[in-house]
Length: 268
Ligand SMILES: [Zn+2]
Image (cartoon, rainbow, N blue to C red; front, top):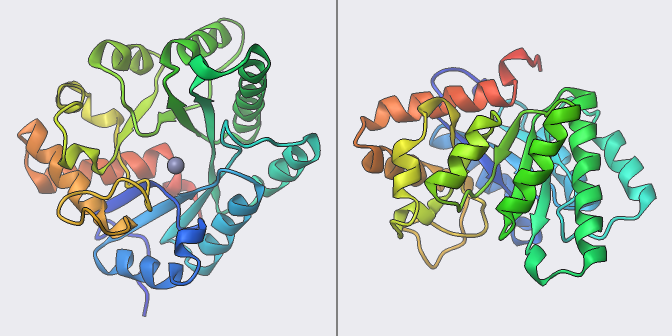
C-alpha cells in the first residue's frame, strides 16, 4: 500500500520534470522509486501540454507528486494558450505557477525582451490571483529580473517566489532574499564549489532542494538520467557544505517545501 504524506517522508524535490518526454516510458516506475526512498516531488510545466501532464501525474500519485503549471520564457505562447493555462492552474493538484522568468536576455531582441517580460508578469498576476507561489527560471538575467520584481513591489504585491537553479553569487542572492524569495539548488552542488558560499550563508528557512531531472545528475550518478530519488544527494551536499547534520538539514528542507507550496493546507 502506498503511504500518505507524513513527517516520515524526509525529502522533497522542489523542481523536477517527469512530465517531459525523457520519462514517457517509465514515469510511473520513477515516481515509485522516489517514494521508496521517502522523496515526494513537484513536476514543473514549461508549456501547456507538459503542464497538463504534470497534473495527470499528480492525479495518479496523490500526496507523492504535485504539479506546477506555467510557460517557460522560451515557450512562444499564443493568447488562447494563456487562457487554457489559467484554467489548468485551478486544479487542486497545482500548487505553484511556473516555470516562468527570463532566459538569456543579452542575446535577445528588444521585442523578445518585452515578450518574456509580459509572459512573466502575466504569470505573477495569475499566481497572486490564485494565491499560489511562483517558480522562477532565470538564466543570465538576474539584474533585469530584480528590476522587474523591485519595480512591481512598489505598486503591487509580489507572490511568494522560488528562484529555481539559483546560479548567482551571495550579493545577488541577498537581493532576492530581501524580496522574500526562496532559493533552490540542484545536483550541481555535488560537482562544483561555485555555489558553496551562497549555500553556506543562506538562512536555512529559505532553502529548497531540487533535481531539475532529467538534467544535471548529481554525483555518484553522473552519466545517467537524473530522477527525483537523487535529490537525497543534493540534500547530502547541502549538509556537507554547511557543516550541519544531514538529518537536521533534510527535515528542515522538507518542512520548507511543505510551507512554501502550502501542502499542509491541502486535503486530498
Ligand atoms: Zn526546469
